[in-house]
Image 1 (cartoon, helix red, strand yellow):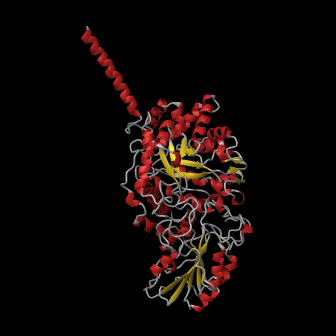
Image 2 (tube, helix red, strand yellow):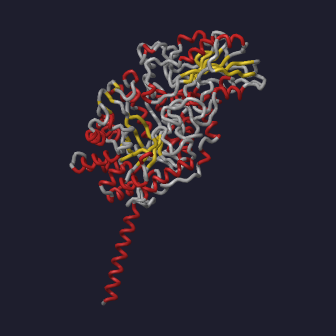
Length: 627
């Protein structure tokens, strides 16, 4: 009898072991459909593990122990938050992997997802390719170019071990006084819609048979994207950042919403909510638009993420009633909360609210399902750790050439010669002596703008690797042409030197977000001074480097040729390519250029439309062969 009993026990044991093996394996099995994996993992998770998935914390507080103890679902680098100054891809990969190992050591081994603001290339990272900001890219009206930029950015982000980019910004900036206007492709939603082609660049092309609203990321060379900031961020009163967008429902849906339809149909993985309000109601607390419209009507199946301390800012002053903020934000439909520092407070408050039935478990499950869906879809469970195999992609020559092409196509020629039959551009490469002047002529930081290496951007040339306009001019002219650089010459210097012509490069200093809000929209005083001293004396082309149209009308008469270069990034050679006629000017304004700030807001299609240069304006030149 005993052997038979032993055999039966063994059989039972094998069945139990077999069952637990298949159970354990289901969410870990890549052959299973994503839905089945999500369902299997969700039912194994405790409340603590679920809430942990909903938390995104800053790199600086994300130790492996914290990841393990609190089951943290996501980590981010804030603007300029780096493992060390001028960190190499290897340093980045090691940091991300170290944090990830904490997540993998938990009971269920759910990998964290690391996110970063890669908004014009992988802009926090030393030696990366810095592409033109969106305000310039909108000018190109070239979705295939934008898609290539998305693909290049994805490779550079992955080169540092990061699988998630907080891009693109699909704001429709309706007032250039807004400090984030350069993050917007255009005042016209149709151009913004066209530019959502960056999403398949970042994430890969969505398969033909995909269900609407389902997120898609095509493996290890691609990143999860983030359409932001939902919705109406570009429509605030006087362009005040994070403020109130006063507009009818029809206005909101016809101007600010359309690009979200394109983003969702292209499989965007995440949507970030805007700090701003719509007719007085904070978007971070707007259940009707976040859950009712985005999730239920548009069938968006990725996850919704808050902005940095976004739920804190539901109250004024921020963080005044945090438990209310948690309730309002999570109830509105936010799935992942960018805390980013005081995560225990968020976890404690949310846990209490679920346990006391203030927030139903079904809301938590919805959030976690969405987060897991993205993680499974992008293959994070199969490949949670990165290596340095893509490090040669960071700032590669191919990507720099692409950025240079984008610079050429983003330039807009606004004036060419004091009269049309005597154009100044293209400039002759061969001349005895030429002057290059201005605050932005030899300043890579000014050329790149905000969100470059640091959050607010930097002044000067030692922030990263690139080509200033001055160096681009020197690279382009005939070897016999003497190039004299003087940042801010006085009129006597200009008069006494007999220059053939001058290239004057002026504009705005770098800024980001609220620091860029401006009611006067002027270029720096030094820049105006240079225009006055140079353009009154010698033939001059003025190149304006700015995140938006600026006041230029008072100086226009003395300027021979005027070029809007926006914020071109590291590849300044693209500016010289077009100034000297290796390529022609093709860019057309994607924003209205006002005469005076009193006219603002003024957008194409308005009843009272009296611009200095209208939307769609741009003179063209042909490429010329010069020795």
